[in-house]
Image 1: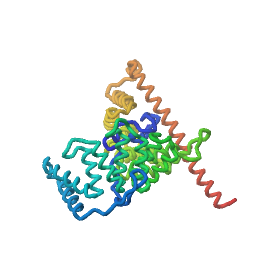
Image 2: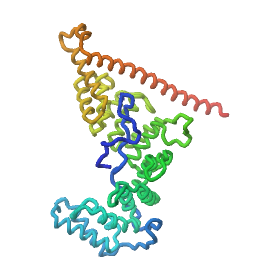
Image 3: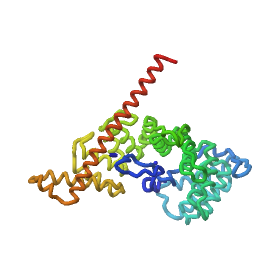
Image 4: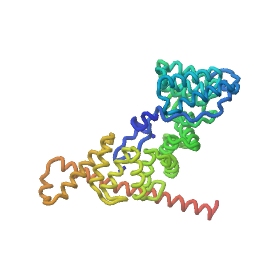
Amino acid sequence: MVLDSANESSSPGFGSTPASSSTPFQTPPPMFCFGKPASDTGAFKPITSLFGSSVVKAPSHEANTLFSMAQAIYNNVFANSYEEKDRALKYFIQAGTLGHVEAQCKVGDLYKEGYATPENHGLAIEWYTKAAANGSTAAMVNLGVMSEEGQGRLFKDYNGAYLHYLQAAERENVEAIYRLGRLYHTGMGVSADLVRARTYYERAAKQGHVLASYNAGYMYQFGLGDATTSLFTTPKIDYNKAFIYYMQAAKEDYPDALCNVGYLYEKGHGVMLSFERAFYFYQRGAERGSHQAHQNLGELYLDGKGTSVKLDKAYHHFDIARQGGITESQEYINVVEERRRKEKPGFRSDEHHNSNINSDYITRTEHQRIVKEKDEKIATLMEQMKMQQAQIDSLMKKLFPA
């Protein structure tokens, strides 16, 4: 049984681990376009290393007034006409021209998204560069994102993205810290370094970044990014820390994290085994769109773990998982259909023995499931024994210090 906002659950994760019967957790989210940059802080501290020396003055009263007028129009849900949007853009531009840093960054946003004007990535970069030179960490992150995605340029510039993120991360922009972790994780723009990747993920996770929490949990679940691990040592898996980080993301209702918390409860990894809690978290993950959670929930309904056996519900969840691209789901749908056939009145055992090749395939599938479940139970017991031994060793050290 069973790591951007536009593509958050559609592309493969960086663990290259397919969602199969042997890998029941949810793999990490896609690598690009995650969420939105954190709100800008320290907008009036000049940055010199990328943009040259600058002396930033507080915005004038006129600039503040223009910015406030622009914000009032922009935030008015009823101001949908082209004329009103154009007026807001012009006020933002006027405020930005007078040195209002937040307005400069906002103009970059509007040109990038095509608000009251056709998309213009060149002008977006121009305005983001002005804001970044004046210390806007949000603008630095946005420049990094555009470099990473190749917007406003002929090619994707991961090295440029790295430099922009690094500048913002030095000023504690949490989105930049997270994105540096991603670059180190994939080796885009820098040499791949899982130790640094995990360090950046944990640093961002401590500031509440949901995807950083999820990715840190993933790395601990598979022993990635440990400084003491080498080609000749076994990866140091830490289910306890994986659970902690997954829970941080699960508290924010991140679907894949909810699924993985359920998986840890189902297997007793890092927590006490609990099918009821596994069922609860799978259900929450499924409600929020995790296809792997639908698959895992279907298996619990099929086997009556944490709930009663309900073939109709199992079929329902397997079907959703199948539509979402979970390859093993069709096999489980076949199992449900075979069980339904056996439960029909008048079913005869000789009828089953003389059935076609597909029924024989289903029987083998069920046999494989039984073998797999036994292997998983043994692995769970071994893990629990290991945890108990660690507690005993800790107690012995306290009682009999060296």
